[in-house]
Image 1 (cartoon, protein in one colour):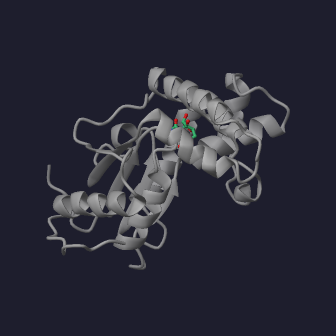
Image 2 (image 1 turned 30 degrees about the horizontal axis):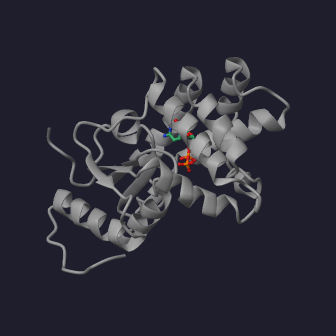
Length: 232
Ligand code: CDP
């Protein structure tokens, strides 16, 4: 396929919950001058919106209505990073009409990243579960970030206990286990690496090591010789 050299660079970062996609994606966006979209926040916002209206995330009509009317402005002022909203997000994310309602927004972000045409960014990083497989199958680079369940649960537990000091680690392990099963087992856009994705296991790596390795992978795909020891 002939690639348009003026098209935005797209980096797709997929993987299971709490594998470190968000931190890595922000660092890559900063390093390569790219816009960033955390697609999980869209599903979280739908889950929040259904619960906030007193609805049930399993109800396909309610969840689809919420996805169609999604207003992301101001959503971060609500607490969408809780375990409860994570659970609701993965329930609404298994409903095909919810995914369909959010697809155009994500594709449009990748095709026309904010400030791309003013030359302020060179493209976009999108992170999620199905970026490399469904949202941007032609992404310039695809990374699939994994880590052991126990390690991911420890990382997420550290984040969540900042707000909920009494939260037991076992509950976070169980929560992630269920979410992994739901995200990987659903029929529409299940969590699975694209056949051309680079897989990176972060279980035993520091953030700096994950960033440095990812930059080497991205540079290789972009045809750039990376300088030794260069990190974001
Ligand atoms: O931050 P964390 O890894 O816990 O999850 P997230 O990225 O905020 O995503 C929350 C939920 O949204 C996931 O468990 C998925 O079910 C769903 N999701 C999805 O299905 N597809 C995406 N592209 C992004 C998130």
